[in-house]
Amino acid sequence: MGGQASLIMVMGFAYLFSIYQLKTGNVTTNAVENYVEYYSRTVSHEIAMSGMNIAAAKVYEDSSYSTNLSVDYQGGNLTVVFGTAGDTLEVKSIGTYNGHSDTVIAYFGFTSTGGNMYLEFTMFTAMENGCAWIPGDQVWGPVHTNGIINHQNKNTIIFNDKVTAGKGIASPPKSAKTQFLGGYEVGVFLPEITSMGTIKTDATSGGYNFPTPSDTLKLQFESNGNVVVYRNSAALYPDPGVALTTLAPNGVIYSDGPVEILGGVVNTNAAGVTVGTATDIILRDEFVYADDPESNPASDDFLGVVANNNMIFDNTTKIDWKIQSALMAINGSMVAVDMNKGGTFNYYGSIYQSSRGTAKMFHSFNKLYKHDERFNGRTLPSFPGPGTGNPKPRLLSWWE
Image 1 (cartoon, rainbow, N blue to C red):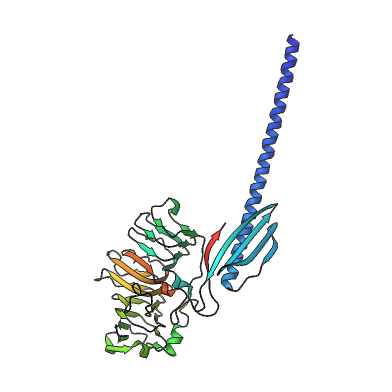
Image 2: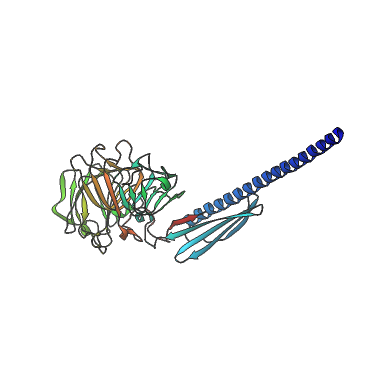
């Protein structure tokens, strides 16, 4: 019996080890298969992403671009298909690798001919510079940055419309107290303004080009459509001023030197007025439209204020501000003279700035931004950015 028992035991162990070896082999095989499948799915997704980035670059370069594509790519296949969905452009990018496929879909809208993509944002910032939205800040209308949106993660910070950010949003919105009521999207990069465009040329021919760039041009707007004009402290056009349509028939006012806006009530024709400078614009007091577009959307008063450098708010004595206009700081920021002073910035229009402020950051104000929706599909005289020619694309949504 002892020999038979030993034999049975040996055979039993052999059987058990054979079953174990089979199971181990199956686990190893499944692990390899899972890895190969995961790798193939990942590569197919990356191919699709690459295709969408290529397609988006083509669309931004030429809004009429719609050439389908099917090529071998990264050991797999890339297919890009253009189509329409209502009044939007639909782009599908399909990546295939080792029997696996993935699809990325994007939808692009377009400004109407004569529109300006940058005016369609309440706030457009190329770089956030580490500055954060603070408690009490509220925005109505689209917000975009090519950098990272920073916020102090409080429920009194409210974005009522869509937020897009190229490099992401700090304190992820899914778990943040900050309210992103209009949704959000990351990985969205938009081209930046690089120059003043034609403002100086147009001011010289049919507008008003300030004759002494070494001096400061000062403007005081009047509700009757006039503007009082100063060279430093000397009045070139004293009170009651000169009609804007007489001073600048084409609506363009420019100086190579600094410009001060002394405030007032802005009354323009339907084409509007653009004030530009090669340096800084200093805002001494608030200014609003004669016909308030917040209560009358049919108002035909339009003002654009463009600084090649900074837009400086003199809050030395003035605490609370109300501004109605489009503001642009091409290579600079919206900054306050006194960064430690509180106050409210009640704004209605569209802001573009290259970066949020550094040493004198525009951080001391409690900010209430509202978009002037009249700027959708239109521009201002010589306002930098796309304003003529083909409609300009804007990414509406991106699905992976």
